Each structure stands twice: as C-alpha cells, then as structure tokens.
Length: 229
Image 1 (cartoon, rainbow, N blue to C red):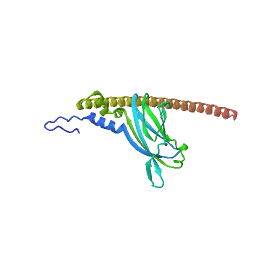
Image 2 (cartoon, one colour):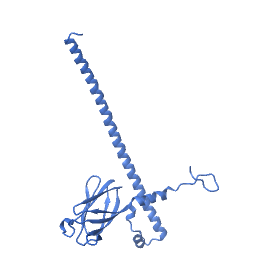
Image 3 (cartoon, one colour):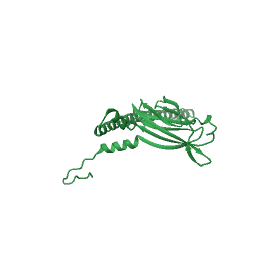
Image 4 (cartoon, rainbow, N blue to C red):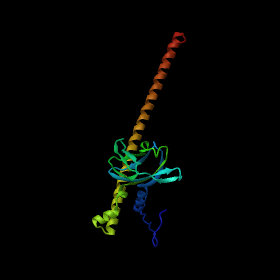
C-alpha cells in the first residue's frame, strides 16, 4: 500500500529518479583488489552501454617475504592491459607502469572483457612472488572531473549540479537503451530456441510415424511368408 501524505487521503508520490541515480552510482563505480602470480592473467567482464567512456585506475603492491606484507612495487614492474569488445575485437592493448590509469570508449553495447597481467617474467625480483592489484573502474558520468569542469567553464554551484543531473539522466537513458537491447536479443534467442524445439518435435513425430509404418509392413510381409494371413 502506498503511504499517504499528511492531511489528505491521496497517495504520496514516489520519487524514483533519486533511487535510480543512487543505483546507477553504485553500479557504475567499482573498486576492488585481487592477487595474481607472476604468469597469471586476471580478466573481468563489464556490461557497458554503447558510446560510454570507461576510466580505470590501478595500483600494484609487491609481496615482501621478509616483512610479510605488501609494499609499493618497484618502478620497473608494469602491467599489460587488454580490452575486448563483445565481438572479440581488441580495442585496447598497452603496457603500463606499476601504477596508472587506462581509458577507453565503448562503441558496441554488451560485455567487455578487461584483462590484466604483469611483466614479471622479465623480472627476477618478482619471480615466484605475489602481486596485489587495486583496481577502480568508473563508467559513464562518473568519469567526469566536475571540479575541473566547473573551473574551466566558470560554472556556479547550481549550474554544476544541473550539469551533473543531466549527465546522470543521460547515463540512465543509455542504460535503459542497453536493457532494451538485451531484452531484444533474449527475445530473438527465445524465438529461435522455440522454433528449433518445434521442428525437432515435428521431426520426432515423423520418425515415429515412419517407423510404425515400416514395422506394420514388415510384420505383414512376415505373416504372409508364414501363411498366417
């Protein structure tokens, strides 16, 4: 039941836009860390709408056996980043340092694969060691540096807030378009599966009918040969 506004019997309007903005903020900004070995590659799948910018910041830490803790990695240790779009096309493949940022823009909606691995095979210091990678992925309007935009365009606080809301609404629209795209793909897949099941059922029915006709003719010829009919 909808809550009632005080002083009247009318339902209180539910504000969905702030909830959507908060949900979008949580969904499009992810921070994590993971451990990798010297020859290990770690990949992540991100569902990204089309024409959406992605910025990822990372920082590596090297395991120190003597101190038994993770320490800032040496400058010579680098990370190789490779990004593939939903069609398997490589849109980013580059070697970075032990700490940095990589960016790319999606041109096809869907699951993008982000893979990272170290260049540890060329470093005896890291041989057999363990590396911790802190990764922060920001998608869509979260990639904008609003203090810098405000200083550059000389925006007031109200104008900057309006700019942020417009960017958030635009990102929500992209997400909605992407969900429609996924729904359409799911519908086409379901229709294709239903058609295949239908044709397989028809083929099974025809095979059973033909098998029954062949058995009847075979039994008839057997009884005629035995002069039972």
